[in-house]
Length: 173
Image (cartoon, rainbow, N blue to C red; front, side, top):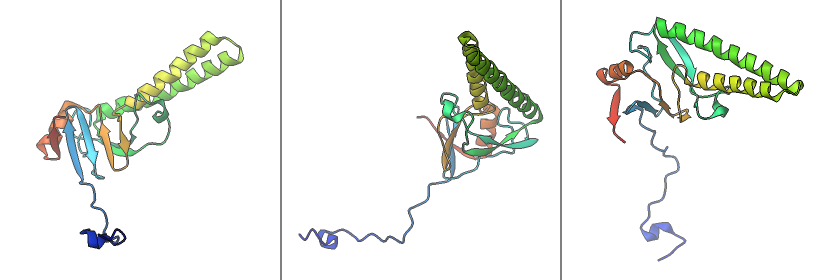
């Protein structure tokens, strides 16, 4: 057998002009988590929290509540539908999050400058709480890449609309 010539060993030459097969575009339900793969779009005609018709579509940055590095930086963004009630709740949540972040940062910096470390701890806790709150409103994701991500925090009614519309397949793993 000639090791320098792969054809003589029964191998076919690789055609480097043939593109790799694309990932399937699909939505999968795994218990309460929606897995979006292959650049598929999350349907936004229903509210992601309650399944009612959406009145507003936002581009939600997917954040992981357990990873502080994702709380305030740039992340994968996906369109998410919200009804009037959940759209208003989100507006209040965004205002409260940034207010708590600002107050916590001022307390932490002021306490650090005056060498009162108890105040620094209180300010830092406020900043951390605002980050967790921001990460979970209205949905979150433990894994998010541009072509594959998970959605957590969607309502059961929304997931039922996805099933009824034939948008998803179910997985038990």
